[in-house]
Amino acid sequence: MEVAFPAALCYDRKTMDDKALSEHLKTLLRAQGLSAFETPVRGLVAAAWKRTAPKQTVSRLGSLHALQPGTGRTPRPKILLAAHMDKIGLMVAQVTDGFCRFTEIGGLDPRILPGQPFTIHGREPVSAVVILPPAALLPPDRKAEAARLQDLWLDTGLPAAEAVRLIRIGDPVSFANQPVDLANGRISSPSLDDRAGVAALTVCLEELASRPHRWDVIAAATVQEEETLGGAATSAFALKPDLAVAVDVTFAAEPGLPEHKTFPIAGGPTIGIGPTVHPAMHRAFVQAADKAGIKYAREVMPSRSGTDADALQTTAEGIPTAVIGIPLRYMHSAVETVALEDVRQTGKLLAEMAAALDDKFLPDMKWE
Image 1 (cartoon, rainbow, N blue to C red):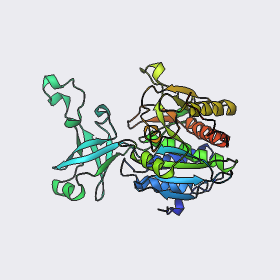
Image 2 (tube, one colour):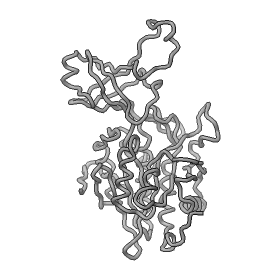
Image 3 (tube, rainbow, N blue to C red):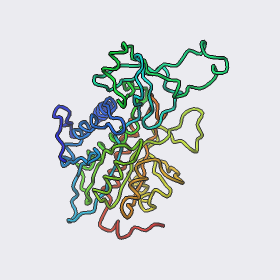
Image 4 (cartoon, rainbow, N blue to C red):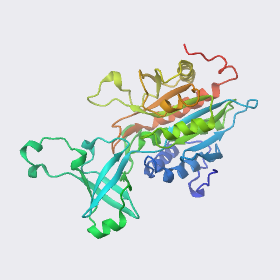
């Protein structure tokens, strides 16, 4: 189906400077859109991509597709650039006396939940906080235990009858924290996984709008990556791209983590290497980064990538796929943190690679 744009949210700047990119990313971060509930954020993404890729459709599952036509002879080959727009959160499982039991959407460490503010998206938005029984009132053998999901509740402060009226079983629950600017160009917020990737696609489309590229480029903001990978699988099946790229976050270096499993923040994107990544795609991204002077790191992925690439690669008869990562600290928490420059450099790398594709790329591809 065609997309209707919220006119007030369209981006009219010819290029995205740091301020514009920061504003765009924060707009995405503030939007709701948990896995399988992505409608609120999709309109914002569509508006942001309208100027550079106005031909847009929405899949049956809710993923957004935006086409930027190439200049080559038709029928042109297509590259799909996918970043997921869903985010992690909670879901109401029980309503009792103004308190709610909940389950997780997308994978949450219970240790980070106590004391966090949330919004329950019921018949009306309801503010709530996650509470944990005070250690002083627990049996001695329970005092030292880490928080368990079954011990946690959402406290709404509502009278029992009002809570039942406003809140339904199955209502999504999202972090209520707002984006925070940190020093040195860092941004901290929930849902940077993977709204940062969506913003990188915005940068890519802006870059490609001012330079020729022979291939058709399709940007996709996919749904349900955190749970099913269903958005990527169905979009790839419908669009039938010749190549695909999953743009997601990866683990940034932080105190206490092993250096060989993390990557420097503000050190540029990562380029995946492993069975999910076609060797020719890996080489193409490395060559594009070297040519453009973009800093990057190779990311070892000896098994599944844990991204949309796992679905993209195995759709239909198989699609040559790559994985590009944005280093992110404190993944799946309320204080995920990225460097804005990494988001920009990721978008530039995607544009460089897409612009370098020529008529010989596909015939010359080999898995070696």
